[in-house]
Length: 276
Length: 273
Image 1: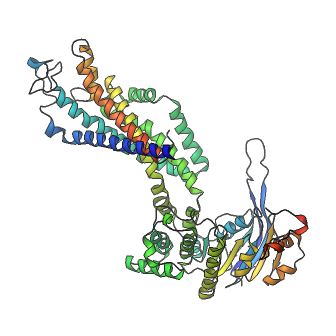
Image 2: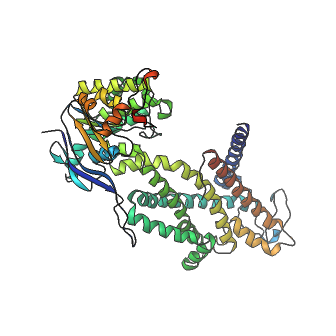
């Protein structure tokens, strides 16, 4: 009893910390143009690799660009595109999962075997393969990540719809004359969405990791756009003399991903949701 | 013409053929025929697993039987067109045993009760609200209860909401699938009284599915007893059930415990669970 209260308190704190950090990051991403001290892609070779100063609080990189500004603008890319992937993958997964779960039978079997096929590959390998086919570039990476992530949503939603279908309230709704569309809209989606959104919080962390990883490999964000993964890539040539060039974006990725995971874990613990 | 006519219904579950071996089909209903007249209540008795609930689903039009026909007002439920089906739907409603799983936990009482009304009646929001308030009063709840969520009601109150939803469209018949079985004795009496009042007021027909002979007796006009998927006894006058010589019926009748514990003995040393 006491320990369960303690767990509840702990997860309450985790939810608070996680969401506060994330709120701060999203705020930074939105306000970047106003709070950044310099233009993030303004090259100034005279000032290259300069130490922190009043004008450049975190110094400059090998092209004399302001590190702080690049970090702040990088939040836009990471959080913005991770959110886009999340929304698109969730939307697509919701459609496919609902169809599979509601229709059942052959349609369900075909769709779910396809999802399992996608899940059988390590995520990043599959994404690399798709990016290899589509060619490097931010939009291609976003597409590839979406194509891989929707299956997790689809499967989770499908399983929940199958469980809901057996519930008496769905049968009662049918008997009271509600159409299939209305049953899905009014009774299924509202019951499916909350746990899926919790899972989505964890998936957002993955999306940011993968996005940065692909940019680090030179497949995602192309120069001169500021992005954390790409910044690590550019900084790696100066790892001996200027390790902070890699360290700053690394810390940013770490913080954001940890925040998403802490929040996601705490929420799923609080609501008793099984993770993927 | 009777309101509902069930003719030679046989239903089996799991009769599909899987890879290489044929699944042994489980017969849930075999050759069942019965009828329910307008304003009449048929009590369908039987122990668990006798096929009562399956028959209920077949009659509701949501489980197509393997063989046989179900006629509602002379029309076959499973062959009628979409328009006729939509029309028929409003005349045949249901109340399930588990009141909690019968309502969407994320909807208020108002939303729950207005769902059937939205499907069939064109009402303005204020008319809808007035109707819901009225229905809540009819089933013995308060109009203020409409903003509450299912979690805030007791099992008995929630069952009243289920009943309100069932009568919202003024149906001709309601299938009551063990409507009082998960309620305590006092609440059972209240709900049974309510069902009797509604029947008299709206001229409703009931198919009252239960394993509790006392509950069935208090509401029904006629009684049918099912065992292992068959109707083993059918009486048009409920009092005849006590003179039945059918062993299954005798067992059911003898399972009524006397008021005083001292007089409670078991039939032929049978153990009741």
